[in-house]
Image (cartoon, rainbow, N blue to C red; front, side, top):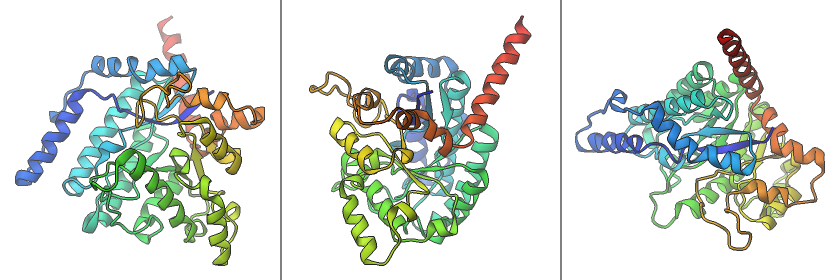
Length: 356
């Protein structure tokens, strides 16, 4: 099974964005709330969005399953207050659950967390714990997105290793689910979103982990750094050297037991570097398709986000490592995934038997 571990509902029906704009505007103008009940999206609208978007590309590229979350850039945690973020997260996650219900063989949910910056951070972490539990236990989601910068481009929050996040990590360990460390939009005009903020967030989060003892406190905590880890593989020697200068354990010992990287790297030499530096055991296949980069690479004639094509073109991987990257690692890191898929298969077989 080829599992794309990094997919977002970037093609969501326009009604979702319209509801969000009403929510933001109402709060900014008067502090009023817009009820989630005012959002109306039909199953047919969802089917059209998926069948003409992600499902079409899954079929064309030969991938089997996508771990699917709300659009990361649209999380936009700086808007409103913690209630704003909670309502927005619940609306977004419920929509992902509907996608998974309509296409159970193709999508499994990963949830957005209702984070907030500033004084609301601690309260939003409590809300995040509750929303994660709801999504995992009631909606069969298998992971979450964790924003290292709820201020959206200004990095005003404490590092992810701060104890304010510990209640969330405790719940992640209890539920045995990983978090993909993924920033949202950038409202900082000096920090472009796709190519600066995203990659800077990945890189900064890695250094936060290097400087902490987070994994001593949470030995089974699992985190994923997307987009190939930002600058991390390219500067692996710098990280190794700095940690050695500080008397810290080797990265292989202190970090790689808990941290994975994904293959959202949109050129062959970059992906080769990732797989040369980071052990295959720590790399998850991913594309973030219909996401940050959507055009065709004139050098290959394929879309930049067709990472399966790129990975297939790398002949230095052993068959064992290739199978691990394509799916085995995802089943291990997202440890609830196998159970969700088996339960769905059983349910589908029961329905088929009933209809006979």
